Image (cartoon, rainbow, N blue to C red; front, side, top):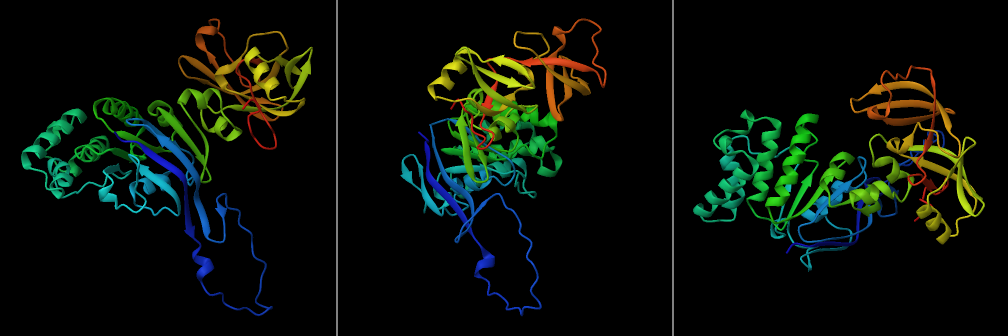
Length: 400
C-alpha cells in the first residue's frame, strides 16, 4: 500500500530583494527601472513556484509530471521527497501527514538526473550502501542486491567502479540503489536527460519493465512529452507553477483543455489556425480561410450542451489528423516550404496565410513517384472529429 495525496500544496520562495535595506538615492542618481516580465506569480511573500497543487496518486500508479523548464515539476517532487519545505498545504503518504517528517523517515527513494553515485565504491558497494546505513543483515543485503542487479541487467558490473560504466549503466546502478531499499514511493527526477536519444529509448523500455517487477508507486519528472506519453498511467501537465491538466496519455492527447496542453503534447505539435465557429442548418461549422468543415456528431453535442454561440475561434488540428484528400466542405491551401521523408511518412511544412503548418502524410497513401517540390501548392482539410476549438482570448477548449 503506497498512496500519495497532495492537497492544496503551495511553495513560495521568499523574495531576497525585499528583505534587503534599500540604498537611498538622490533624484539626480535615479534612473528609469526596466520592467522585467516573469511568468511565475510574485506576491508580497515571494515567488510562487508551485500554486494549489492537488493530486491523489493510487497504489502502484505511475505518475509523470511534465512541463517546460521552470514550471515547478521538480520542486513538487522535492517537496514529496522532503528536500523542499512545503509553504502551505498537506502531503500524505499512506494517509499519514508527512509535512514535518524527515526525508529518511518517509520510506521513499529518489533517482537524480546526475546519477549521484559514489565514485570510490564499486557497483556492489553503491547498491549495498543504503541498506548498511539501515543496519540490514548482510545475508538480506546480498539477496536484495542480487535481485536488483538481475532485474536491471547489471550483475556482470557489480565489481566495477562507476567510471568504468557507460551513462546508461550508471543510471541503472542509480535506479538499483533506489529499489534495493524497497521504498513505498520511487521518485525520479529527469533520470534520462543526460543520455543520448538511442539510450533514452532503451532506458524507457527498461523502466516500463521495471515497474512491472517491483511493487512501488512511481512519481517521474520530465520535460520530454514523449517520455510522459510512453511511461505514465496518468500525466500531470504543469505551466508556471500551476497544473493545467491531469489525465491518461490518451485523454490529454485527444482532449486538451487549453492551447498550452494542445501545443505541448504531441510531436510534431498541433497546428493552430484563425477561424470562425458558425451555425448553419442547426449544425456547428468551422470556417478557416473560407473552407468550411461540419463538425462530427460528438463535437456538435458537446458544443450544444455548453450553448456555445457563433464566435471567432482558434482552430487546432494535429498533423496526423490533416488529410490531402478532397472532402465535402472545401479545402485549405498551403505552399510547401520543407518536405521531410521519414520512411513511413512524409512531413510537409507548409506556409498557409503566413502561418506554419505541418502535415504528416503516410507514404502508403501516396501514389508511387509522388513528390512534393518546394514552392508547390497543396490542398488539405481537417478530420471533422479531430478538430479542436479554443477561445482565442482565454485559450480554453470550448468543448470542456
